[in-house]
Length: 448
Ligand code: PLP
Image 1: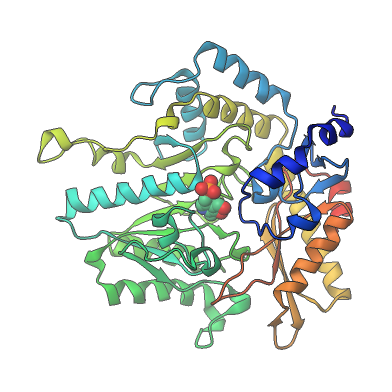
Image 2: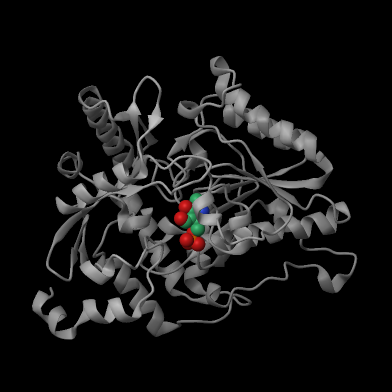
């Protein structure tokens, strides 16, 4: 436990304000208010340096702390591992990486190889490099293009931003990496004007095929999709979408890369989001929920068929994936991830995520009856979106300031919620909720 006065005497807030450059934050308001400094977490709740308590309904602001705060069993496992062997490059193996890989692969039928790095962006970069190298090895330098979807996000580096359909994130960071091509989103609530609304899932998937034909299938190596678009508005593809996507990838010899950075490890009530839809990916990336933020770890997981392609090359010295991530050899990540997975299993957190998510959406739909500002409630498991509108009939979105006001009101009342990213092309009117998988009915009631 912490004495709040300690933080005052340490001048934490002033030091933070003067020296720390926060992520995704406008710093000007801090001149008046000071930044928020989080000093303690326990279960679903965090405390700031002023002693305020919050129900964290977004698991560390960015849907990460899936098993909740204060897990001493993870901290103990990490400590023991660090004392035994903290680091050796992944050019060699280590014990927790081997154990965790086996446990992970057991949950991912069809997949077989785990490549370790440190963040979602990095895991996706590795996937893009795998696709590019295959293009050179197998297709004579063609098939280097990668398709990504409007409203999806794949990371903060220049290459992963080049593969992201969120304009606030991209704006002012160009020029971008060539050969990343956008396909239309699949948000039924915001269906495109010319869409076939009677069969929207198949129609939206067919828009991907249109792009493939326009670009030339022989130039496209992979299609990269979030299983459920998270920060772009919590968008689940409608029925018919995924089977058609799978068919298209097979027909045009395009690898399917699913970005599970948000949905991965239980968030939607299955280990991975794609497992709701019977999809068979070639590459799966994951990060946030892999160790619930107790250590930095990300994984790029492939089928054995993808891995096999790297064993040989015309030039025998080139027959391998020529990539390294220094900290992919840190043992803290897999040590934490292993215990994280055990907690999810032992505490039945997949079932709990499904169950509490359903309860939460039910209660939000009751609120929708009462408040016309709620246009749409959607999501799966404990990944939930609430789209706010000025008018239900026209679906005109509320201004960004309204969403900010709702978030501010919740914060003032002790609940931290999230919101979608501002976009010049799409919308920023959706509240995002992603409470920890340990949520109880009482937590959901407080949140509502
Ligand atoms: N992919 C998705 C779907 C994400 O939501 C994010 C981060 O929000 C990333 C990738 C990037 O992950 P990281 O911030 O760990 O680089």
